[in-house]
Amino acid sequence: MRIKGTIIFIALLSLPLLVPPAFSQRSADQDLRRWLSKKPVIDSIVIEGNEYFSDSKIKGALFSRESNIFRAIKADRRRRVQRETLMKDTSAVKYLYLSSGFLGIKVSETFEPIPPDSQALIVINLEEGRQFFYDSVRVTGDYPPRFNKGLYEILREFKKGRRVDPFRLRQAIYDIKSILANNGYPYAQAAYFIDTSIYDELTNIVFEVESDSLVHFGDIKITGSINYDTSIVRRELTFEKGDIYRRKDLLESQSRLLNTGQYLTLRLQSEALDSSGTDRLNPDFRLSLREKNPHYVSIKTGAAQDSLKDLIWNFSASWGKRNFLGSRSLELSASSAFVIFTEWRLKSHGYRARITEPWFLGIRMPLTVTGEIEPGIRSLKQPYRIQTWSVFLTTTRTIRDKYKILNGFKYEAVNIYGVNASAQERIREEEGLSIRRKYYLTITRDSRNSLFIPNRGSLTGLRLEYVGGFLGGDDSFYLLEGSWSRYQKIWPGWIFATRLKTGYVQEFGDSRAVPTNDKFYLGGANTIRGFTEGGLGPTENGNLAGADIIVVFNQEFRFPLIGKLWGSIFSDVGNGYASWSDIKWNNLAVSYGFGIQFISPAGPIRLDYARRLRVKGIEPGDKYHFTILYAF
Image: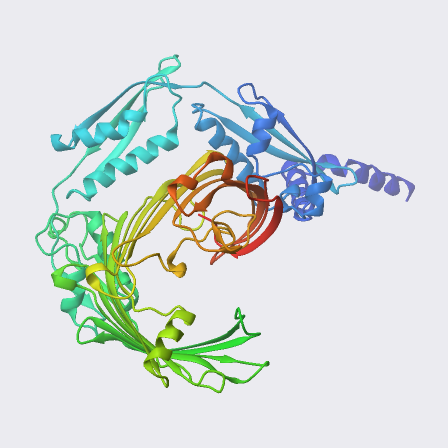
């Protein structure tokens, strides 16, 4: 029995030596995965093998972040090892090196426990390899010579001596194929080849392009058109059977159809059998539509603060028809406002009818005719009734997606019931009522890459209003306003935004002055911060009277903070003046400050703090502004 026990003891001691290596490795991997599943905190990150980039540069590109008290307070998930940490870290480092010409970069990342297993050490090992720079860049292949100019325009950026960037090369391939696809060659193929065989930092790049055959559009089959005539659908298409295939025609047609407001979704796809089928050079297309209901009802209600009353409750309802007299749209609406709590009564009510012709004069230039009437309210406090009615005619024309021209005409009339003629004149003066005839024109050029948070492009606008004169009415004046905004990224995450705005209004004819309500008013969240809304400009008898001339300059830096929270630093300069002689350097209002924005689906929700400086006629002070969207 003693011998048998000794044998068993020796066997147990020898057991680890008998376990297969693969089993031991598998057990270690399972232990590592269990440890990583606990999401240990990242104590430190070690970079090995790097020569070209510093440790701080590489760490700044990583998804992982070394834990500290500030990241712990804001619960930054990147301070812990996550399921996606390995993939995101290695991808970020590879992108950093590849975009700098290191085409053979190798990255490995390991995680090591730091006792007592609640923290992790990340080790990133690099093999940088050789760095490559462009030498010669050329295009070969079989394609029509007329594309040479466009292709070489794309390749201009790959200048000799610049670092090879495979991501830019791939973008060039996409751009080359887009040029061909937009000119009848959707089956075109393109590829690039890098010569790294010679041990030299300069390398040759060869783009090989094969255009394949010229393609024309075939038939367009429309399905799902029930409530709207197919002729209306075809009118919005920018191509027809026999036209040369252009990919941008497909995209623009879909955009135009959605902009009609008649469809929930749509799908435009080719019915070509395959790349060797008989119809590949004249592919048919199927347009599948999902329509909106031609009739709709909308009801809105809510409370708002009135400048004279405690609380106003608004209610509105509308009914619309999207296929009125063919492709036209009709909307009828009614609205009312009630004074509540302090007293319970109807404050105002109005009615509106609007009809839109999408193709005015056979051009895709929507014409909207709107009629509005406010019958007015007679009460014990106001024994007379003021009725106003107006008609608007507006057209809109979009050119090349960037340019938009809006112009229109407004005819307005005011009637006062319940008093004699002399009392009507007195009421007109007291209430500031006037009959208005106006022509207006707005031209904008918008090259911004985003509506809410642009970091590239510009927005230029020009507004003209001509009131009275040969149009008739009680007042005659003209107004000119111009603005220019520019947006650019100055370093990762930071946006540099600039705006310059000016305006001028002048009476003419029999009018002695521009009506107060039609002048310019500066100050507030969207012009010169640090002042109340409309609280900056010339005064009369101690009261703000509105400006005839305005000059505004805004400068702002915008940057991300945490998640959807952004920050900004800004300065605003400008003022409003009664005449050109009043414009002086020493009376320009100046303010500066900072802001915080939450980027919501409806746009940035903004809180700004601004402090104004002491200048001639302006005392120092500060103000908070809370609003939605950026100032410009």
